[in-house]
Length: 305
Image (cartoon, rainbow, N blue to C red; front, side):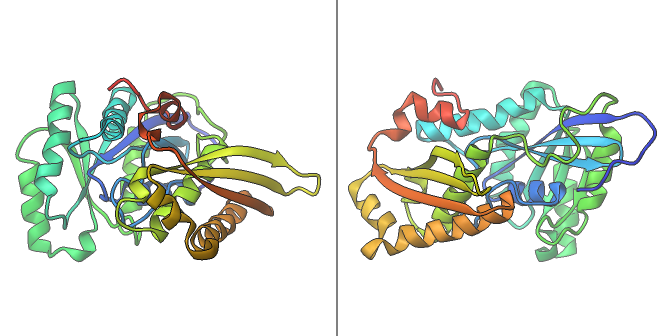
């Protein structure tokens, strides 16, 4: 995170980053913030509820809303995630539509977002991501296709993973931020309780470790957070799954799977919190957790969709 330079008016903008699943939204937010605050996996739909990262560029504070991916929803949880993504557009000062330039389903995914932008009467900045893997001719054709209408004010070609082009985008966002007071201290990286961020870290490790349907039918909640006298923290979390077969998979033979998930999560939490972490994971069966109002409230999602 860069330090604010003295002098001049402060600026502040809420920047909504929207796009299809796996477009690289969380990777971009982490890159702009300068540290990891959002989970990143190779799986789609890693982000379930909007997370806010705080990035400083000179006198401008950018509050980056990492939204769930926009896709055709089927379940209540899917509908709630897509609703959360679109709701973030209403409060945003600036909207960035992030597009995976190499995606096979690029246009179909983009059309859902473009339709919502038109409905809301909003314009956006187009950011073509993962451009290092796409031929220049294809990128130029893609740019012409997207800018044929008047939805986009600017186009940036970036690689959120390598950082190529990201600072140009950041500088542009900072220049467009309206004058106003900062909403957070300049050294704060995220607008989310530590308990929520800790649960997201463990859910990321769960998604990376397991395959097929288990990660998408599982959720993680931080049940207890105890500050110890020696400066360490004791964290208890529960992984809720929808079926008994999933519970057995998540635990693994002699508990080896949940142990590996916990070890990976603990290491990242210690780096994030800069202190020793005692992490205790439990795996429980809760067949209809995705239909429980309380679970949605914990995620900051709208149950009534």
